[in-house]
Image (cartoon, rainbow, N blue to C red; front, top):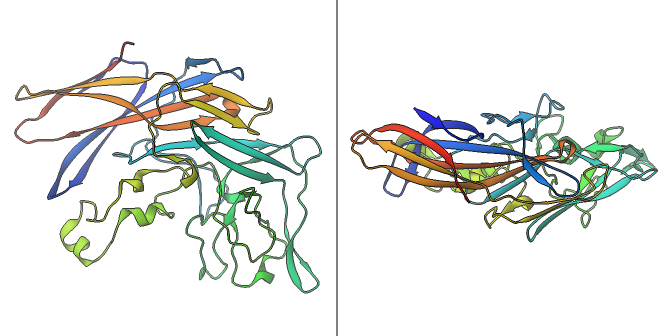
Length: 332
């Protein structure tokens, strides 16, 4: 039984866990707090607390190779902090592109977001057309470099949902060209195969997450399942684009700035001092006490809100069973 004495959303995951020398059954408790913020930077706990997501929220733009708009909250543990932004880039009047940026502490992730543009045949070759003006562009991986060739023989495993991949460049004629790119690595021709860029989460089977899961060899299939492979890395559970996986914690007072992602221009706020205390009572009287801190920041600039998500893993023992778990806000 879990008694949640906070206003925050809560979820749980029962799963096997691997450690050196073996593994065990574990329970991970996930807690999420939703905050609203003003363009001037005032932060307050939101009246509506967003429920914990047990699966990714997909964009719905590509049925064959979907991408995610929002991450699943329920994962066992992360080796670093994640920052995910779900929203749009806003183009100035009559402009065909905008440079956006997400800054969290000392980490800055820039994007150049173009209006719609196409691959087009010119003088026997294929080039990228000029971009058109639109008021806003969804920052989804469907609009970044990537995709799968028509014969399925060639795939950009870092972004199967994207555009621009083809065995024969002529097959791209008339099709959408990448709109989202790094300002220093623009897509100017069909030969460009720069790293797919974005602020949305990566799905588990996308690289580099898939490689972090480890080796699915005969030894794993015969001796390790359902534990993780021996070369498993916690980076598998990091869902953010690599440019927004932070080695440092999401500490209270961390400054956050968003540029080009809201009609009012620059947004700024700082992370609140958010912690949750978990107390677990066991049958043998040896209790666990854990302070849950945020390892994931999800920002929705269009809604002027953000989520802080943290988790705690408890070992399940046959000889000392969990009887009850209590969640309390930490007084500061």
